[in-house]
Length: 138
Image 1 (tube, rainbow, N blue to C red):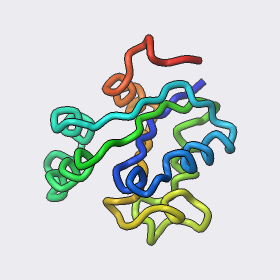
Image 2 (spheres, rainbow, N blue to C red; image 1 turned 30 degrees about the vertical axis):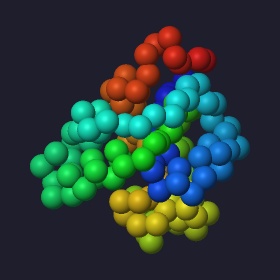
Image 3 (spheres, rainbow, N blue to C red; image 1 turned 90 degrees about the vertical axis):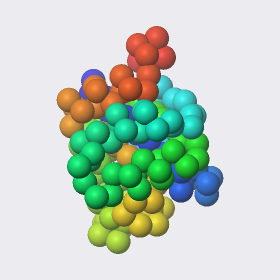
């Protein structure tokens, strides 16, 4: 079984969308195996988004993701990474396909309501940043 980290970002949390987003992933046959609510600190945010460190939007991204509580979750299933990314849609909600989570709930390219791992390899790294082995149930 493949796993992916899913984050429900501050804009979605502020609008009470966590349950709806998780429900859509579960409704697509993905299994929820770990869940926590947290207020991400700057250190974790910088580790999580390290791939973007040299990009001009890095500072704004860190400020945004640390601005309010988020939900971190692990979903698993066959081809979970690709399936979740397809369900979420393009990073920019304006470019996302109709019926995707970001098209339905995202506000703009930064406040797009969700994050999902982009590869099985990155999923393993990201999951370790948010969960211990004891916190993951299969």
